[in-house]
Each structure stands twice: as structure tokens, then as C-alpha cells.
Length: 297
Image 1 (tube, helix red, strand yellow):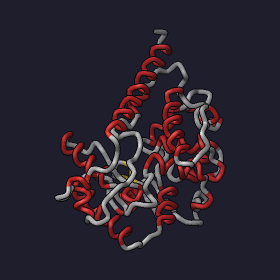
Image 2 (image 1 turned 60 degrees about the vertical axis):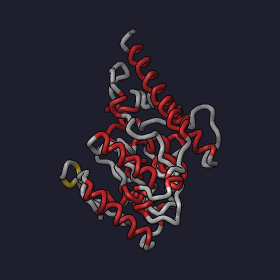
Image 3 (image 1 turned 45 degrees about the vertical axis):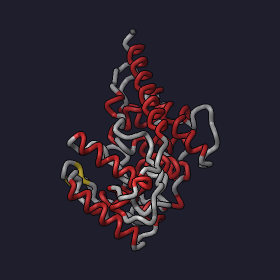
Image 4 (image 1 turned 90 degrees about the vertical axis):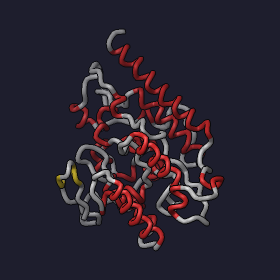
């Protein structure tokens, strides 16, 4: 039984099993959705031991500099433990508990990767009071989870960081707003390079994504000016880093650094960050141009 909380208050109880009509076994979930979420959230899920140390180090550095919890750095394993076992309070003590529980589960092989992913997909928040892929696929598209297209999967992956902003990404006719195209092209290209989906120069299903008709009445008119930057996840790099670590070091040496400095920086080329920053700047510039056109400017 999983009980999601909002602002410290329980929302409802969700059974993670066949007794729940929305429960979806892993083998009944579209690979398009699975691959899109793994690519966006945790591409090393099946190979890491619960942590991507470079991401945690970067989070600690950013949060210390900002003097607040601005950046996460969690793997799917860490997100799952946080949601199931721990409070939503952002404290160092809770983060330490999270790391310890993940280490115990992964190090002792208490739960298989497949079962962890199955539970994660059935409890993840994907909208206002929408939890799990079974609810989400029917809510947005009127489909079974097995029938989700690559476009559907990329849309759902895009809302994981800020699920409550999901409806702001649709136009009044149920199609996606143009600013989403760059996300589809960027993530789709990554997935294609990894052999997870065929190459598609038209935007990886962007133009085929349609919100189900019954929900369109709740969308704002296309003439309404909405600051979509307020719902962007610019605190992150746009994509989860892939794990590359020294197996001979213990967990805390890998996170906080050890004596051998050359082992602690094997993650991403320097120009990768630059290109992602440029991508975010292009998206923001495109949105500004769209708002100017909507305002007649």
C-alpha cells in the first residue's frame, strides 16, 4: 500500500498489486514509455548500484552554494525509497537516510531491478492527483499503458520533474505547444543513438500527441499568455548523467572524493554542459518569440 502526501496531508491509499485496477505489471507497459523515462531520469538504472556519485557531488555543491535544496541528483532507486519510506522534508538527515536505505537494498539485492521499476512506475506522480502509469495513460490519452507511442512516452517523461504543470503544455485543441518540440527532438535523438527508437526527423511523435477530448475543456485558450518558463526544470542539466565509477572505492569515497583525484571526474565532457545550456537558452528565446506573437508584437 502506498500513500502519497501533499503538503504533509495524505491524499489516498494506492494498492501496488493486481487488486488495484490501475496497477500495471512491468511487462504490460510500453517500451516507449519505459525507455523515455529511463533516458530522462536514470539511464544507468540497470547497471548502477543505486547511486550516480557525480550527480550527488554536483547536487551537494550546488545546494551548499545556494544555501538551499535547489538540485536533486536522485536515481530512480533513490526516488523510490524517498517516496515509499521517508518524509518529503528536504533535510540532510533525510538524505542520509535515503542513501543508507538505497545502499542496503541494492548492496544486499533485497529487491530486483525489475520489481523496483515496476513499483516506481505504479506510484510515480504524473499530474494533479494522478499516480502511476495506469492512471496517467488513461487520464491523458484514453489508452492502456501498453499502447503508448514514442510521443506519448516522451511527453510523460517530460512532466516527471514537475507533474502538476502537465496541462500547461497543451494547446486548446489538445496538441502540444510548440516550445515542447525541442525537448522531443533532443531526447528522441539520444534514444535513437542508443538504439531505443528509430531515428525521426519530424520530432519523434511530437505532432501525433493528442490530449483526450474529454480533458480539452479544461485547457486555457491559445490566446492566453502563460509563462511556461515557470514550469521548466532549468535547475537540472536536462538529462540524467550516466554512471562511470571506480568499483574499487567505497560509496562515500566515490561521492565525496578520495585521495586519488583522477578517479573522481570521469563523467561528462566539458562541452556537454555548454551545449545543454545553449539548448535551454534557445528554448527560452523561442518561448519569448511565441509570447510576442501572441501579444501582437
